[in-house]
Image (cartoon, rainbow, N blue to C red):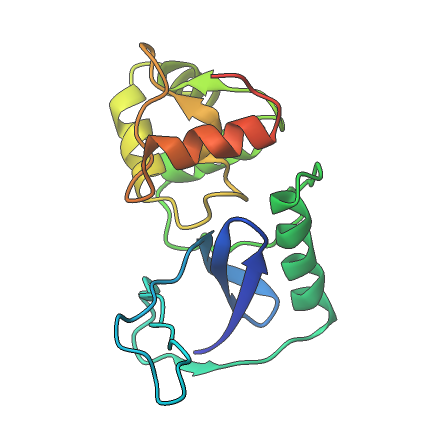
Length: 182
């Protein structure tokens, strides 16, 4: 397998990454500020540390490249973080390894409209599994496409809920970007 890694910058958010196999998205990282080393390079320029990669592609060859489809998606991500309403519904995703349940949750997540929220129990019902809100939450916690499968739009029954290593403030900021007051 050969994957293409493309970094993008979202003004005010930081740097993110998209990973493709051909034009099919296999992973994406939301933008975050890149840490700066305490010791500057000679000449006073601070070096940036690389973002950790979470891509689990054994034996994959990674290459940096861009084509028109890849550039279009990068542009969509940049526009989204600039506050523009963007529809990611047509983005081709690598979902081959999902179980039937996970696929149902992924499809239900894709159907949650921009600027709206659902509770984990509502998402489980929409996926055809009304008693699987915890398993639905587990799927969201391991979602490798957090904007395309918009798990930030899923909230706990008693409040905002978590958002992985980025935390609830990042989730709140994404929802506010979409006009949702939380």
